[in-house]
Length: 233
Image 1 (cartoon, helix red, strand yellow):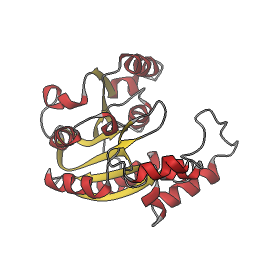
Image 2: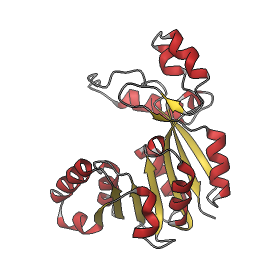
Image 3: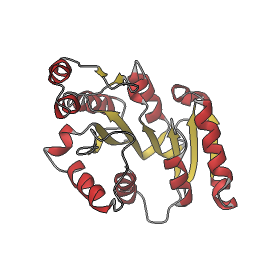
């Protein structure tokens, strides 16, 4: 995700420009902190109190210059219009949030309104076109067959939530004035790895394979997650 996002930002904005970044549903702040360290002015919006506390704790341990470039707001991503003026940001991130929102279109439209002209909208969603992949690769044939007819939900213990189809989100982004510029697959080969699995000592080959697959057809189409990048007209 970080490599994909950096690629899109580098291709859209002048080198060295300090961007105004909004991270909606920032979680514990990993992506927001990374961008603040890179010199950008970052606002993180998160409604889960534990995540907000963890992000503030992590920020407190950063050098003063980074602390000054980042602010954290406790709030709901659907209320961006309450917190910010339209066109206030160059980059808006919303990663791993839409899968837990029953009606995503109003949220996505609100995110697009926060972008200045030419701004970048980065979404990470569960891939509704590949829901049979996980149970199928796990040998759960009944689960795989059921997933073919499951248009809206991803079934994973402890991680249930909505899934989105590429063609649907492509139409949504076009309709709100931030048409899809490019998209990637995320977790092509590693989606069935157990959450508590010990990562390999050398992550380089794994990341290289995932990154290559995430930008290559037909592999990216069966990824567990999709990273969509829209550009505000």
